[in-house]
Amino acid sequence: MPADPASTALPIAALQRLWVGAILVGLALVPITLAAFGAIPDVEFVPAIIAAATGGCGFGGVFFLGVNLVGVRFESRVRDETRVSGANVDHITHVAETGDRETDRWLSRYVFARSLFGGLLIPLLLFVGVFWFA
Image 1: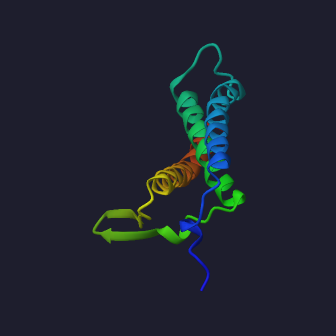
Image 2 (image 1 turned 30 degrees about the vertical axis):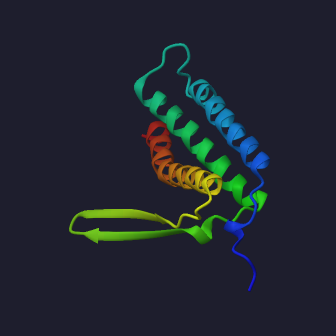
């Protein structure tokens, strides 16, 4: 049986470059989005929210998708569960720690970026649609 991909040696240098690159992409998307909405120099509330969501979504997407492109497979350590109780829907992410501090740190960053990307993508599309077409 092959070894669990999440427990093998991580390409730490690639993950560090990817993390920094994702942060830079997220930060760069904020002023680009503000300029696209004509909100520079007078920043209004809605374009600022859209710009922040775009930056967060860009950061999360670059890191989440980049980790998968680099070949690191954290998905074997992450399990999602959705619970419906009355009017509430809870999305719960379970993470199986590896015991290796460095791997667990990158696993936590991966789960954060994945959740940020997934949690901002649909609201961002809705905000942009309402802003442009309403």
